[in-house]
Structures are given as C-alpha cells and as structure tokens.
Length: 487
Ligand SMILES: Cc1cc2nc3c(=O)[nH]c(=O)nc-3n(C[C@H](O)[C@H](O)[C@H](O)COP(=O)(O)O)c2cc1C
Ligand code: SF4
Image (tube, rainbow, N blue to C red):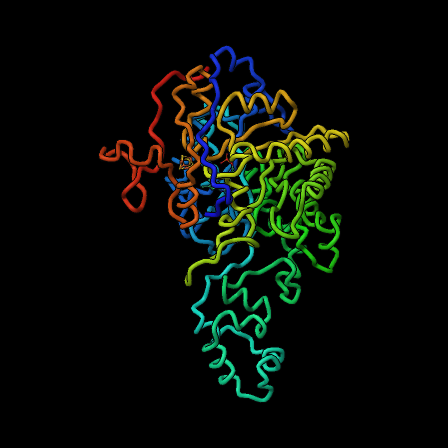
C-alpha cells in the first residue's frame, strides 16, 4: 500500500462519547428524507465488498451473515457492496444481472429488515467494470499477445524481418530499452496487464457502452425494487466504467467524452433510464468522486458540476468518495491483476494510519462541503453523504451541525464494530471497538479473501459454533454485543 512520504503515525481520535440523551437529541441520530424514504438517522454504512458471494454471484449464507451484523447496528442507511449488473462470470462478486438473483436479494432485504427492527433502509450499489487482465509473463506476452506493428519494425530497423525474429529480439531486450520501441499501450499491457479503457473506441463493445449500459443498469434497478431493497446507488466512483466516463481522462470523441457536459452525459442517461424503470417513488442516487487524485483526472471543479447536474436530474442522494483509480496503481506481480487502491489515489480512498500533516481522518470533508454548497447554491436540497476516516460521534455531529454534509458514513469503523451505532445511541460509546486504520481488511480485499477485521477475527475462534472463513483461521463476523439495545 502507498504511504505518504511524511510517514506520520496517527492513533484513532474518537473524541468524547455522548450520553444516551445527547445522542437522541443529536442531528446524526435524527431522521432525514432521501427521496421517498425516511431514514431513522443520518448514519450510513457505505458499500464494502467482503468477498462472501460465490463464483455464480449468489447471495450466500455468508453474505446474509455479513449484512445481518451491520443491520444489528441499525444505521439509517446500509449499502450492499458493489454488485455486478452484467450476467458474466465475475469471480465471487455479488450479482444482480438476471432475474434469478431476485429471490436471494429478497432474502437479504428481509434479513436486514428483521435484524434492524425495520430501522435500517437498504440500498444496493450497482457496478459495471471493464476487462482487466493479469500481468503476463514477459516471454508469453512477446510470443502471443504483442501486436508487431510497423512502428516496432521501424524502431528496430527490421522492416522486412520475419515476425518470429522480431519477437525473439524483443524477448531478449532489457525492459528499459523497450520504451522507445513498443507503444505505451502495449507496454502497459506487458508491465501492468491489459486493461480496457472507456476510450478504446476501436472495440465495438466499448464504443457501444452508451447504448448498452442504461438498459443494464435499469434492469438491475428493477430487480432491486422487486427484491424489496429500498433504493439503488449507482456506482459512479473509483476505477470502474461510469467513473471513467466522468473522469477528465475520458477523451472519447463520440459526444461522451472531452467536455464536462459530454462526460456527464452517460451517467445522466443511465440515471434517466433507471428512473424510468423504477418510477419516482423509489430512491435512486449515486456514489462518485470528489477528486480523481491522478494526473489529468477530475478535480472538485468537475465534481461540483456533476453534482449539480445529478441533483437537477432528480437524484435522491449523492454519496461522495475520492480516488481509488487504476492510473497510479502499483505494478502487480506477474500472474496478478492490477489493483486500483495501491497508489496515492488508493490512499485517498481509504486513508491509513501512516499519513501526512493532514492525517487520515476526514480528508473528504472539505471537498464534500464545496460540493454541497454548490448544490445548495443551485437551489437543490439533495442530501450529500460524506465518508472517509470518520469514527467518532463528535466529529460526525460537527460535520452535520456545520452544514458540511447531510449524512455521515463509516465504512471501516462499521467493520471494526458493526454495532457502533447501537452502542453510541444507547450511551455505551465507550464500548465501541475503535478502528485503527491499519487497512488489514483492505489487504484481504485486495487478495479477494473474505474480508474481516483484525480487532475481532480471532476472538472466540476456538468455539466450534463460530463460523470460520474459508482459510479456517478467522471468524466471519464480529462477536455479538450483549449490551443495551437502542430503543
Ligand atoms: C474492504 C473494503 C471494501 C470496499 N468496497 C467498496 C465498494 O464495494 N464500493 C465502494 O464504493 N466503496 C468501497 N469501499 C470504500 C468504502 O466504502 C469507503 O469509502 C472507504 O473505506 C473510506 O471510508 P472509511 O474511512 O470510513 O473506511 C471499500 C472499503 C473497504 C475497506
Ligand atoms: S482491519 Fe479493522 S481496525 Fe484495521 S482498518 Fe480494517 S476495520 Fe479498521
């Protein structure tokens, strides 16, 4: 994982915990409208992929257990992990890409309703992503994947040579000498693994994304609605297809890239089709980036424009993240795929305890406020959700009191203690297991291993009734708190 060069170590700063009365009278624990829904509080657990589904993308018992634990904490909103809208094998990623997934999702919605005593509204994050291949063995790349172009022949001064001879020369060449010979895109495929981009207009399936995606997202949204999930979060953040349309790096020349209004066009068309499918009486919002944090990527200025357009189009909420892009990701080992949270932009997405002067807590609050101010300035009341390193009541309440956001989310803190909100609301904040921001969980995510938290995954592991992860070493869910329940 990338670390800021300053390498300053931070300990968690949860601040003082409220009494039960203080919590009850706080903004954070007061209701809010999200489109047609009323959330019991302004608390939110954003999407986290826990790798609990299976190769077919089903809602498994492990998936149910995962969400049940968060529902027991009764957040106002709980977002189901990034869930695939394409009916294609996607590893153990949850899917919503066919009607056959509806019964499983129905069970998931029911599980959350029951465990939260109907206190939590459930959203599902719908994702599309493009192809990312593993980093190839260099010999195999030169033999089988490299396209021997005229430019390569020219650079080698081997215009008429046999292709096999050219491949052999390149195979024997030191890596740093390849730069002037092979074009940057093929070099990227060699060094990082092949990765599709939204600007690969020569590929028909990429060129046709604006035609294909609105219908796919709309079908997914209709399934979520049928399953009894309360709302949809369109995944327009991080390294995936929709965020790449929004990114300043998108230079498509078909009216869907280049200028900000062209870049936001597909995200708006997707939203339009989704709205058509589910009607006005269903909550639909999106998650997007305040900043890409990569060279040439989108900035707060772009996001202010997008947010205002999303609000104008009638989105019911705007959930903010930052970074998490492929462009600055670390080189993967041969045989592994590039992971978008390993560079500086990845750090900004999930800041860890080794940080810089600014520290890891609340790095998205300033950009979030700028976006919320602009949305309000344009005359829209669309709720804005901010997340990132927030783990205490005082901080969350201050954000809301100062009008910097309308809801405050906790991802890793909720993983460290899924019953966080129940504890805080009932005046038992001192019993919260406070996240240390070590990113042990994120390391598991990176390896597509079942995600757990180091603060609890060995607790009571000797008990034969405790469910264990596939490696047998860790418990799958947090121990249940036996304390006071929030009324
Ligand atoms: C294990 C793990 C999986 C995540 N999966 C997703 C995801 O599916 N979709 C998403 O938008 N963000 C995902 N995130 C990012 C979080 O939602 C959140 O934005 C980030 O962790 C920063 O918030 P925090 O400091 O409260 O953890 C994930 C984070 C973690 C730790
Ligand atoms: S493993 Fe636990 S303590 Fe460490 S960052 Fe993840 S949630 Fe926080």
